[in-house]
Image (cartoon, rainbow, N blue to C red; front, side, top):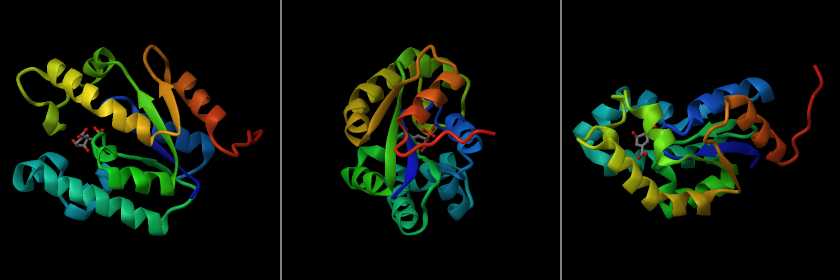
Length: 175
Ligand code: S3P
């Protein structure tokens, strides 16, 4: 399918890039976290606290399956842990072209240090947690990706241009 999919660690910019890209390419943007929160009628930190991470991971897989049957020509940004399941990586490949927004741990820490909505980063040493998780996850992100975009030290304009240059079949439409 011809969707554009954004993956990467928490705080790498998927949501903002998705919104800006949606405006530039005139495609709708959908976010798996927001879809799950809508269906569950509660926020992610409540889902983790009440039903645990595995329950949330199952909801992510269910969300992708549903998208596979219904979405084309859209932008999909996915939660940072979603590509870790092999099954999810296969579903992502079927859904469209996958862009990995790759960031260094320092960049991520700067962006998420005041955030209270991500349960996995609420422990006593978020910097160490980011380093450990990122090391564990980078292989899965790379495996899932069709294109890797390094986002460190780049503004959103540069990141969007790099994505657009790599979108399959992308055509610049003059205003
Ligand atoms: C998670 C990332 C979050 C959200 C949940 C778990 C993760 O999404 O799905 O808190 O495991 O990396 P964002 O990447 O949009 O922050």
